[in-house]
Image 1: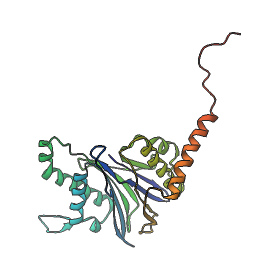
Image 2: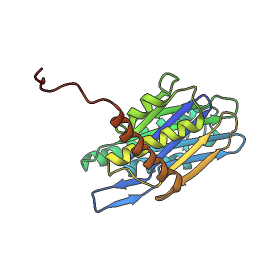
Image 3: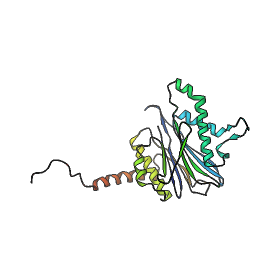
Image 4: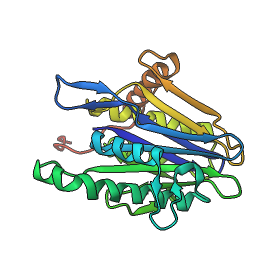
Length: 250
């Protein structure tokens, strides 16, 4: 299991992905699930994956090698697509090709073709965009009314996003809320854990403002976790107790 979240606000894009994968309590490993395609001044694209690790890695590898058009001989890659929409279509095409090749063998082995991606960034001359791409290769786009998308173990981290993320909000407030969402998921699901990869982009910059990995024990994230836990305890203590229960004699 994994958890990835993308937040697209007016000031830019935040992508956060954990790195934990497990096949049982005694087989826990770390794999990078956030792939960044970067040509400074021309494009920055981020692809975060969830689901079956072998499937997602095969899709990413296919995108890195490129998909050849049999009629023209042109090899399509993420770094030569003219727009984010066309690049998202290419990711969907790669998923379908991997399904066509490996899907029957996976089905025969009783393994579900389970994969999903968050795909976002900006190409020079076009807007910053964020998509969620499904196992069938189809996708939806993030909008201003709900300026975030999630894949993987999303339910534990969604309440804070619903309450706190606003399209017009500050970019680094969005990053903070995204990290709280990640921490909330880690607290409730052992299948999600550190390290966490983070990418922050501003519109028009066409180069990452932040591209880092948060390791266990990193001071800011440790402090954020402690402060959020303390704030929740203080909040519930400050709310009056429910006025329900046995009526007291007058």
